[in-house]
Amino acid sequence: MSKNNSASAPNPLIAEGVAATGAAAQQNGANWLNAAQAQYNTSQANMPAINAAATGNATSDAAAQTNANTNAATEQGQANSTIPTENSFINAANNWGGAANQAKVANAAGANVQEQAASQQQQTNAALTAEGANPNSGAAIAANRAAAEQTALGTAGAMNNADNTVQTQALGLEAQAVGMGNTNAGLANQDTGVGIAAGNAGEGALTAANAAGNSNFGVLNSGYAGQAQGDATMMNGLQQLYGDQTQAYNTQTQQNNANTAGIFGGLGSIAGGLWGTNLGGTNGTVGGSVINYLSDKTKKEQKSKARGTLEALRKMPIDNWKYKKGVADEGHHIGTYAQDFKKATGKGDGKSINIMDAMGVTMGAVKELADKVDKIGGRGPAIKQGRPNPRPQGVMGLAA
Image 1 (cartoon, rainbow, N blue to C red):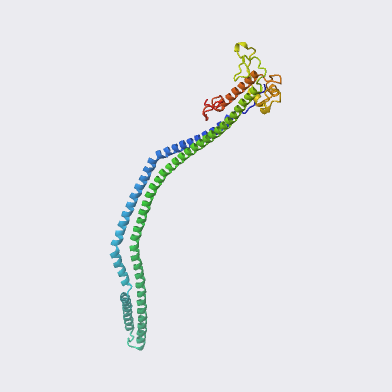
Image 2 (image 1 turned 120 degrees about the vertical axis):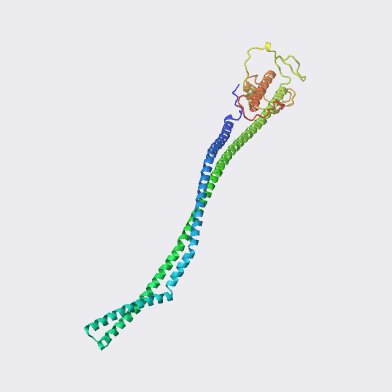
């Protein structure tokens, strides 16, 4: 008989590829989670040192802030304590440049010039008398008049210089008074700024430590997300695999059931077509509901395995036909032809079919078909452990 080339079970390599892809995705997710967990554990182990350092920095900054605030308060107090002195100094500076003080200083300068002029006049008169000149002469009077004019001019100039000097001194004194107040106030403001900066730095250190802790939780959450994604990929792959194999199983089962129906239909047709023919070794009667033929194992020889019976049966046409008038029962039947039976099996004379051969081919085909159903259902060696294994049905539709 010819080689059996019937449809085989689905290729297990495809299922293995889908399962391997899902398993790889699941493993990648697990690796991601493990890496994230390790990083989280390392970061958490470092957190006490980070928190201690941040707390220490914050404590130092708080101490610096307290010290700066204390200095600012002290300097502000010193600035406040100098206010009365500064005000008195400013008042004195303002009075120094006032009209009364200017007049006083100018008059003193003028009087000084006049005293010097009078002394000079006395010396001049003494010199004239010593020389025998008359102090009341016209020349002496003219000389005295000129000296008096010079004295008046000198007095006016001295008074003007005194006024200018007093005003300049007053402006300088006022500037010094203003500077005295601003120095302490500026120091107080500077220390206040230092204190505020120190407090902000301490808060920043604690905030950074908290941010580091929050970042650790973010890494761990990312790892769990990777694990969940890997599990989802694995589950989707397995669901797809199960669906594909179940569909293939159902398709093959339907085909096998159709083949089984064809086989039994052919068997019935062959039996009908051979009704009343030479049975070759029957020990019963033809025409009853049961035909018995000799099949004792001890009466047989030259035994060998019959292979390819299912394929042989596939090659036989199964038709509806009617015996010609005057042939057999002249009735309508379903079955194959002796010529096709001989061509597919090598049995018979091409004119009639021996019922023994017909039954043997049919039983062999049923057995080969049953083996195929078992393999598709997961009971044969071709289906590996771990794949979907729906409960197969027997040839007659009963649970196997």
